[in-house]
Image (cartoon, rainbow, N blue to C red; front, top):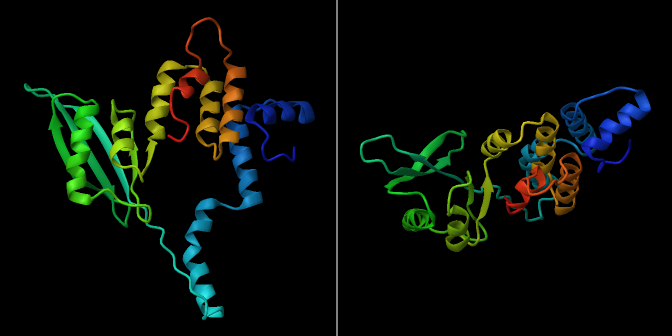
Amino acid sequence: MDDPGCSIPGIVNETRRLFMLDISQKKAARTKQKALEALRGNDMKQYHRLWDYVTTVKKFNPDSHISLQIDRPIIGLDGCFLKSPFGGQLLTALGTDANENMFPISFAVVEVENYDSWSWFLRELITQIGRGNKRVAYTFISDRQKGLVHAIEELFAESEHRFYLKHMFENFKQRFKNQDLRDIFWEVVAAASMTEYETALANLERADPQEGDKLTTARWFKRLPPKL
């Protein structure tokens, strides 16, 4: 098996065919990840060496101009119910410092969580931290809060928005109990391109085919924008 694009079910089937061994999709996914790291290197370790690269260029090619900016502010957005006589919901914006510690940026109590409340909250946030820009844009991370995706697209056009995988997986587990489908979940969310994403979705469709009007795992994913 020398194809880096080989799917997780494909690895399971080839292992069974070549070695007469049955392995779980979870084990196949871990094996594929280790093989890709052996071929391409570990992405995180490579990023950690960027400063070494800058220093080397400046040392051996002093006439070159090189600059490095890797700071992309990450803001976590979340909402929760307040258990008090007055009810309401708490909206929060959290940041991380250089030591990866979390700190509060802003919070507000609203009557309900929807597009209007998130839009108001984000407008208030803009008065304190601005909108960012193409050079230094924010990255927002959130759960699937009601109305938040549209509010961010409208008010922070230059920013990226992603979902918490932990929250997504918890929602996924509540609806789909099959362990093999849960393993393929990680193959879908780890996709680094639309081609890989569509291949992973196709694997889900084969593992959980459409029957009548039931909500399949593939349809569950298709409800979400791929970039999130």
